[in-house]
Image (cartoon, rainbow, N blue to C red; front, side):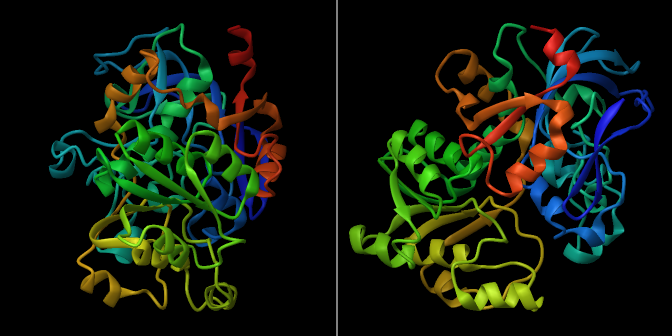
Length: 392
C-alpha cells in the first residue's frame, strides 16, 4: 500500500509498505478514504521531535474509511461499516479509561522514554512518534486499528466526508479544550490561536453559550475567518502584548482563557532566542499572556501541544490570581456519540476547516504547503485516497 513516511526533518515520502494485517483479536483493518494533516504533525515534520522519531514511521492520526476486516473479538463493527478513526488508542479497562480519561490510558503505550520524561506513560496515538507507542498512522491506504470497538466511531454513509474527517481529531480536541476551561453560558473567552483547532474552540465556545470570544493570532487571513464567525479578532502584530490589550477593553479579565497555538509560538525576543539556542524546549509566551488576561479565579486550558520545559513561566501570577490551569491530550472516545450527533443533526458543521481538497498521493507537497502557510484558503487540506475518490 501507499503511505506517508517520515524520513527526516522536512521530509515526508509517499512510499510502498506492506498492507497491515490483523495481529490482535480486537483489531480492525480500515481501508482509508480520506485523511488530513494535523498541526501537531508539523512538530515531527519540522524536526522538533527528531530524537523520538524513527525513519519510515507512517504518519497521521486523522482519517476515515471503510472497515475491511475485523478480529474475532470485535463486536460493534463489521466489514463494510464506515468509520471515523479516533487518534487516541485506549484499552477501555484501566483506572484512567474507567474515568473516561482515555488519553491517559495505562496500557497502550510501552514507551519507557515517556515514563522517564513525565513520570508516567500516556496512551498510544497513531503516527505520533515512538514516545506515543510508535503506532503506524493513518495517512495511508490502510490502517490497523487496535481495540477497534473503542477506537472507531461508526458513521452514517450519507454524511459529507469533510465533516467526518473534521470529527476525527480537531472537533473533539476543541471540545476537550472547552471542557478543560469549563466554558459555559455567559462566559467571556479568549483563544490564542486561529488554526483549525483554535477556530473550532471559538465556535464551540459560542455553541456552549459564551457571550464573547476573543480570537488572538498574527495571521490576518485566519483572524478574518474568526471575525466572520462572530469572534472579536486581536492581531498580535497590532497589539504586541495581547493580554494588556484585552485587559484594556475587558478590565475584569477573561472568564476562560485557552491556549491553542503550542510550544513553538513566540511573541518576545527572549523566548525566540532561548528556543533558537536550545536553552528551553517550549516557549511559554502565549501561556503567559493567557494567564495574565484571565480574571482572578478564572480557568486556563492548554490544548496546544507542549512537550518539554520552559523558562520565565509566571508561576507567581498563576498562584496569586487563584487560576485553575489544566491541559492534556483529548479524551477522544468520551465525546462520542455526542459530537457526531450534533453534526448529523445540523447543529454544528466542522467542514469549514477544510479550505482545500487534494489527492492523497500529493501528501508530500501538502506537508510542505501546510508548513509554509501556503494551503489555499489558509487552513487544512482534505486528502482523498484512490479508494475514497472511487466512492463518489
